[in-house]
Amino acid sequence: MIEGLRVALIHDWLTGMRGGEKALEVFCEMFPAADLFTLVHLPGTTSPVIERRTVKGSMIQWLPFAGRLYRQYLPLFPVAVEQFDLDAYDLVISTSHCAAKSVVVTGRARHLCYCLTPMRYAWDQFDAYFGPDRVGRAGTMLLRPVLAGLARWDRATEGRVHRYLAISQYVARRIALYYNRESTLVYPPVDTDFYTPNPAEPVQRQPKFLVVSALVPYKRVDLAMMAARHAGVGLTVVGNGPERANLERLTGDGIELVGWLADEEIRGLYRSTIATILPGEEDFGIVPVEAQACGRPVVALGRGGALDTVIDGETGVLFGDTTVESLAAGLQRAASIAWDADRIRRHAERFSRTRFVNEIQHIVEDTLSAPAGARW
Image (cartoon, rainbow, N blue to C red):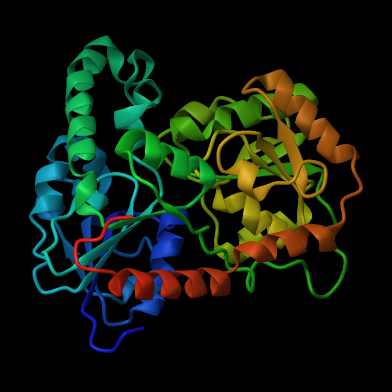
C-alpha cells in the first residue's frame, strides 16, 4: 500500500459477525492504521481484529437501547452518517448495505464503496421487512413514505462514491439499476485456510441438513424448516435474530434451532452434515462458500449470488422456486448424489482471502493513480 496514506473505514453497524463484517475484518488487516467509523457498535459482537480498533460511533450510539434497537432509528441514519468528520483522510473505504456509502468526503479524497447491496428494504424488499404481517397495517402505512424518502436520498448520494465494488454479478446489476453506475466485481473473502475438509480422518456424516444464518425474514429460514419436514429429513439451524420466536414454532421431528455457535463448531457441522442450505435469494452468500471449502455440497435457490458460487450437480444443487416442494426436491436430490469433496474444495478456493487482498490492492492503487474527480 502507498506509504503515508490516511485511511478511514466506514461500516453500517457492528452488532454481529456476518459476511459484511468478515470483509471488514480483512480491510482492518490490510490497513492496520485506519480509523473505523460506524453508526452503532455493540462491543464484543465482532472478531478480535475488529474489536481491537478504536471505533468511532455516530449520534445513534448514544440513543436509548441503541445496541438492541438500532434498526428503529433508521430514519436518522442519513443525518448520522453525514456527520462523520472525514476531512483528514486520503482514502475512504465503505462496506455498505445501508447508509455507509453516503458519507461525505473531501475533494482530494477517494471513496471506494465495497457494496454489499443497495439497501433492500428501501428499494425492493419493503414488504419483507415492513409489511402488515411484520409491523401491522398502520406501521406499514407510516413507514412506506419514510422508506421511499430514504430510497431517494440513497439515489441522490450515489455520486459521493468514486468507485463501486460489487460482491457478485447480482449486486452489480442492482448497482446499475438503482445508482446508474458501473462497478468492479470483487468476490468477498472466505477463510479457506480455516474452513477445510477434516484433515485427520473421514467424518461420520450426520443424517441432517444445515442452515447457518441470521434469523431475519428475507433469509427464508422458515422455508428450509418446512421443506425439511416435507422431505422427511433432519435440519440444524445455527443463528439468532428477530425471527427466532416465530421459527421456534417450526421445530421438532429432527428440526432444531441451536442459536449461534463458535466458528469451530460451525466448521464441524459443515464437515459432517449432508449439505448446507441457502433457502433465500442472497446478494452473495458467504455460508455456501464456507461449506464448499469444507468439501461439502450446498442446496441453494438458483438466483442471486448463488449463481456465482454454486455449480449445479458439481458443487451443489440449485432449486428453482421458493416453495416447500421445490426445496424439498432439492434436498432429496442432494442426499442421493455421491459428491466429489476434492472438486468442491477446489471450487471454493477461488474465493480465498489471498485473492481478495490482491484484487483490493490493485484496485486501490489504480483508483489513487487516476485523475482527481474520476468516477468509474
